[in-house]
Length: 286
Image (cartoon, rainbow, N blue to C red; front, side, top):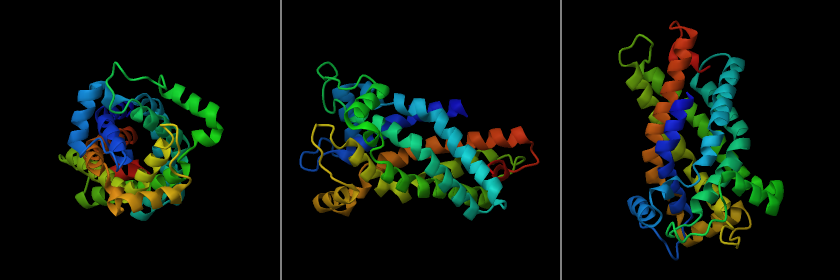
């Protein structure tokens, strides 16, 4: 499970960097015209390493987050009893709420690192932060715990329904496709279900992610643009219209399918065969 998560981060992080850059770039002086132009620009200006800025943060938090999400979701399902899509949603939402405690500061550091040296040549860029831990330490010294938890409300707004939809859609798809341990097409079905569950989760919560990214990146240049969540939403819509909530969505969807397909399929297979083939995939997640 850990190895699939590491591969998922390595494959998905460049798409996440592109997503964040597109979400927070200035509408008055945009650096990127779209997803593929952003990829090309980062590689040309900052080298391939530019796509992996901030990867240390998700790598460090990977084990904790996966343990919390699948651990809380499994325990919640045992408490709820019957395995239904509704219970899968509630258990997933509970997992999303609890893992936000780690996810919020982790993504704050990731976002700040991803924005560092935007559009600058690697040799000429001056680094404010050495790495993700150094970034969090700088923020803590200047802003205290409040600064470390910048974006916590929007993280909760994203994660609770996001993980609810994640587990709900996975349950519905695996049940509809009939994923059974003795099915010769079990793995393709699990991969498809996991990938589509990831896409569904991101589409539902993407507007909240845009606002979270903007709030967490706010102040990188030394000046805070937003005074609150409502102010961020108001300014964003006034300047860019409601399409602002789809910025970077293309790279997110491209990333979501393979990363979540691998994660869910691996977890389901490991738990299924660890507990015995008499249980189906959905039983293994509860």
